[in-house]
Image (cartoon, rainbow, N blue to C red; front, top):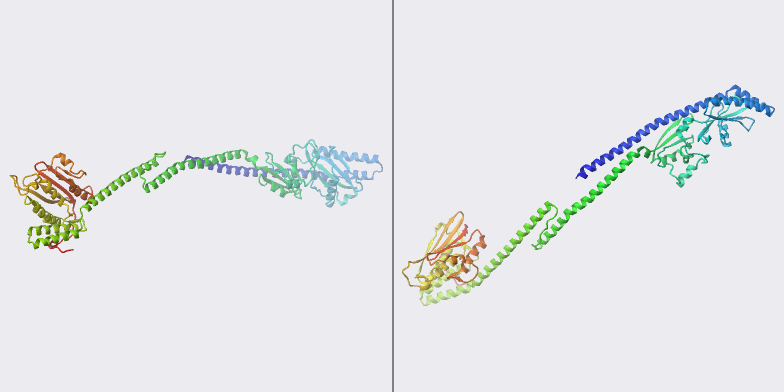
Length: 613
């Protein structure tokens, strides 16, 4: 965050500021050099005008013209020599007036060999230069002309260029015999501008050699140097003089192409001669310091970007790898493997997700095991129920045959008993629903009590303590019969007048079974109470064990089935509880949710007729 939002923006701002500052430096330098070149151009023009005035004054000098006429008309060499000495005195006067003058070439109309007067023996003009100067001056008599050539042959140890101007006398003075006067001089302002350095021998570069240099690419004319190049262009657009000798002879278009990227080009005209002076200022020499700073900033930005990319790659790998592992483990859980767990990592947030995932998998595993056990228990109950199921058609038809035989033999007891068993069996085995009304359950219980009294005699009394407003409530079918059966077979077993001594009443009171029902806060409570022999605390503690068999005469199969049916249907909120005291009796308390069983006609409940299926 520091690199991205603080360091990187600061560096970018510094780079932008550096670029703008660099551009401002270039603009300032360009403006300053424009002013400087204008001053150089003005100085060169002043020097040229001064030399023009000297040349013009000489060509109109009466003494010079008279001595020139005497020189031409001299009859002897001695006389010609004496005249030349007088002409030399005149030129020496001008040499003393201006140190810029380096030589005079005086050409006569009938002589090919000129009179040369110079203050240094090294000055000389080639035949081509002389012919161009004479031709230019002859085309404009009476006017000073400046040929487009400079000589680098004056003051070889001083490394100075010389400029030559030419002037021819007007037509009216042509009788003097003077054809052309060529004045050679040094322009100090031009020397200050070009500043040629490092040349100890005569410059042998020919005009146009730079073009070949450009074509073969031997050297970069716009070299990266701290010294900027100065150039003087003639009227034909080629370089006449330059601080870089490789520029000589190059055209102005070539110069612009070479220097376009590395330098700024500033130019100014010399109006008197139609020349152009140009300065190629190396940009690097102006902006070297700011360039170094910019390079450092560029490098810093590059390092920050690379580090940021590396850090993001490393950081997101630390996040993505645990997420991929988490997704893999989720797929494993989806495929049913609940043994997978997410190990702790380096991030608190991911660790919390992993902990939540591990907790979820643990809970799912526990719930899955519980569901499996519940399904096993439900299947076991269904199997146990199937073990006791009989084909209702076969059983009812058999009982109907027994009843018909009892009618034929006029045995009313067998007829009534078989009829009660038929009603009980038909209602129990032919129903598809598992919930019936409390009224119907009590009616089936009456049939069962009748059968048990036929079997054991009138050894107990059955009492139904149920309010009529509760008879519509729904209860599981055949839920009371196992409890009443336990009270008859086991609660009264071994007691006087009990099931073990049917018909023998002792001095004990009547054996009583009471079924009662009540509703409190949305819960139906049904109690089956007897005044039998009861159970000890040890026996009561193991009453719901899963082992088959009896415990002191109590069968745990029927009681466990009742309890399991209730819990499987409505959950652990509803169950069966047993209270028992030795010698006093037992109470089985059953809790159920309040629900309606639907309408059940009384006629169907009390129908004693059976139709053969």
